[in-house]
Image (cartoon, rainbow, N blue to C red; front, side, top):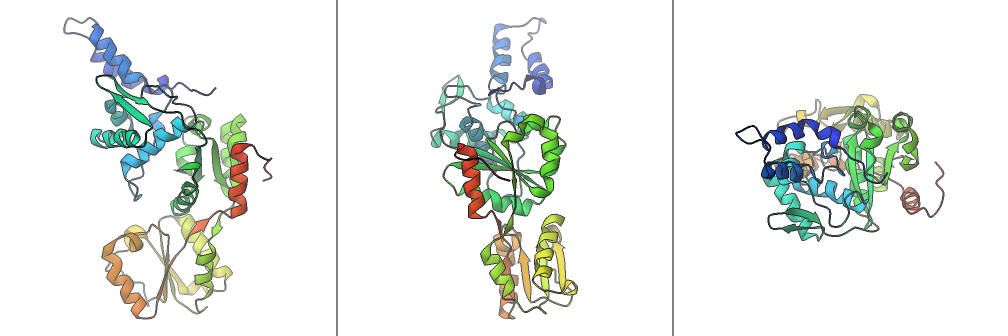
Length: 331
């Protein structure tokens, strides 16, 4: 069923706004009933409670919300002419401010995806064709960010990342992922997700992720006795980087690590380091506060290496074939 109704999820909200439709005499008013209707419409085809804003991403929150709505336009859940939920309802169900929601709606209008009727609200302007929505599920946010960037660089794809627990703890994982054309899951989590979504496995694809060639080239060029520091956000990313270094012959005793939240401009690795490795969106790359620390390390002959994960070109072609039905997929 292309359009899934989510009214059950909105029951408590319905009760709240229903209260606003009752007059001081205890009777329903026509204006109040219209208020109820206009607050609920638009959410029957898009479960806003599935939207999970990531405040640590460099991408603004209004762009994240706009991408979430655009994905539902792209997969046909929100057809042309369909009324979008009100700013108030989107704000209450997502936890975003009214100003952020307003920015998202304005951005959709700028992109030609929505339009506003004075006094009536916002509506879907077009039905996107050829734009595929992809969910990427995993437990290492650092890697998910890299994959999202790689897929979004392709003209016909728009991807959204989900930490594994947000899917496994959802009341109905199959419905949670239903609005996406394809869900990509690393092999280590594939069976778990497959067991949770039942008959929807036709929209599930197992993937293998590897470090980029440039990342491996820089690591390979390091002296095998080098003291290496790793800055991570998750244990999975830390294990991936350590595993890669050990595979290339680096000694475990020479590898130390800090979680991103614990690494500040006044933090130093015990004994010093010769190379610093972290994910591409880490604060050491994105914050000007770390510029002098980075320059200090480089002046001493050290290196700073962004550890970038990616999908091989052959896998990208398989994803494209899976989405278009051009050829059967062999996992």
